Length: 473
Image 1 (cartoon, rainbow, N blue to C red):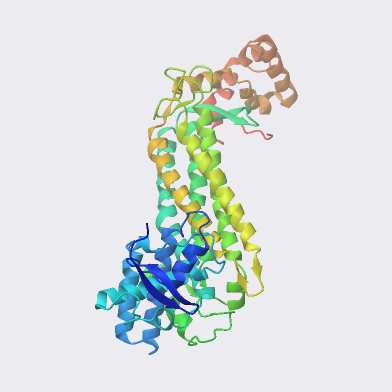
Image 2 (image 1 turned 60 degrees about the vertical axis):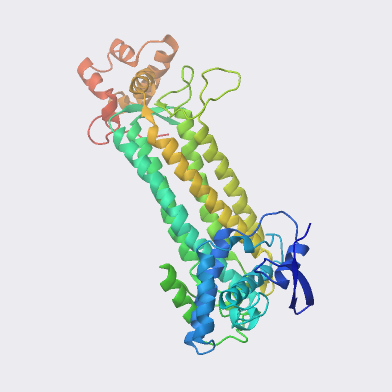
């Protein structure tokens, strides 16, 4: 049963709005028009849009277009929203008008009505603020929603994903140091290769995540240009010429990130190539994290019939029928998250092509996809670091056993006996079940002392210190 309703008006006429709602007629129309998914615009996007509205109010005051009292009222409510308050006042579905006009008006109405409430006026009175004339002054949904997209995604990358990746990088670096002297067999094509240390292997993972951190910085740079000031089609109609530069300066000062007016407003509103570029960085980060998660779960496979070079933390029972079974669930969680992220990123790429003439009309979906991808990657990275990587232990005995059994130690003999002779030794050792050492000595290819030095596994992990290197994969 509906509660008490009040009557509000917009350009289309009267509309019944829930009495307790801070939004108005335009928002209510969108609620009724788009009951599609139940997924509302991401809270991070809403908070970012509030920051943009605050910066616009400051700019309009600086330019003498808005009184200090009205500017202060807008900024006060925008700050509440940016802090995560009033989140229940943004009910519009993601699948709405492709420009995000419904969400822009949702923000304008909430700010105006909340200002009325704070000033002691009735909600809907448009005192002291008008949602269009004051809150939306010098703005259009067509430039403000893309601006909020850039600002909000930049903040999510900087404040959420980047710290989570740095946390994972530190965890992997710590394990690299811890495992620095543990020799294991390397693998290429999933087959035995030459020895390396477990620490070297983990150093590669840490470096991959380090590059992921750099990719978040590149993504932020890709979002520095803002569409604000272009208004309806990019010409800047009804916008003060100094307005966009002042908004960008205010946003930069308020967020600590660098923003600037778009070089070309027609590109900034007609295309979303910048968002597609960011999706590409997220795709690369997800691919990297998937590789790491898969390697770790493979190295931990077992406990009796797999590689079992490392022991993963036991987080929960692994089977409803097999007692005592423990599975690499944190790796599985991360891999699934990365698949999801790559799907969302692919969706952004498809959205990016739907820029028809002077406006891309999939911006709400792009905002949802990018924020959802960043949110999930952030949570998954932190969980993987805390509940998996931090607790990984090396099985030194198992690593040593696999090294000693490997025939690819024969690679170190290439400089001494040649590739062809070394290949014969490896094949004969494999066929007979004997050791490389036994075959080499039997064939009088090397003396025992030189052979032992050449086949010492740790020396093979240190180029220039032990056995001579040999190429080939």
